[in-house]
Image (cartoon, rainbow, N blue to C red; front, side, top):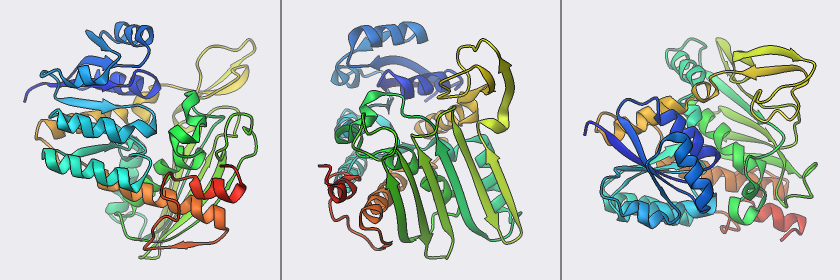
Length: 364
């Protein structure tokens, strides 16, 4: 297969990241996109020179000239759309998180196996250039035996209103961004088995918008003794903070995605777009450049296209996505109960990750 023809299901923020990344992939061609709002998806397609626009994803899946579909839609839709895509003979990339429940994860994995195709999990932090370099240094023993990975992602709130709705998103800041931090740490450590999860969540700033958490911290301990510490917030003004620290017996690695590759800018009047999620651009700001590249999206999409072309095996799979989802359930349950959750683990309330935390707060 010389060219992989791609259909995008979703036409908002994450789909924009995907289409901009795919534009940098030599063997990819985006030929169709789907969104629920006709005018919006038409404008999206016109902006990105995509020839075909749909409001029904089944019509997009019916096209025989589409090889790969990328799902960038609300979390509660991931499972059904992915299963339908496999039934239509497509290969599938799904944005994080994989889905809302472990039962849905099982259905998606079964659909992929029945189709004989991999379900590729779009965890961009495993393709972020700084983190890829950090992982290579860890693997060659540059900092000795790694015993702790800390990842932080903090900003003032999500891109789309549906994230605030826990029925559609499955959780708050912990679920939205904690899946990034845990996936990164687990990958850096070589994907060891989880031993326990301890977490705290709170709703401090955005109670007018959501029942979910807007600030969280959790620690995952692995069977090999290493830990991953993840801090996430939707309650931090002033733009994006996204960084990681990797501690080993013989050294340490610090990676800052946004500010480590930004320009320091002072503007008395303010200006348009600065760092992701910046609410105010007056005074000193950190203006990021080549943000899509810094976050690894072109490398991620290039890899997934190579998988479809038979040139690579998936680096990040649905099995990884399921492992992340299981820890998200455990983290919310730990925050709800105020205690450590030991593995092996079965969710007390399997309907959505945040369910146990909502019940503990009386927020059903």
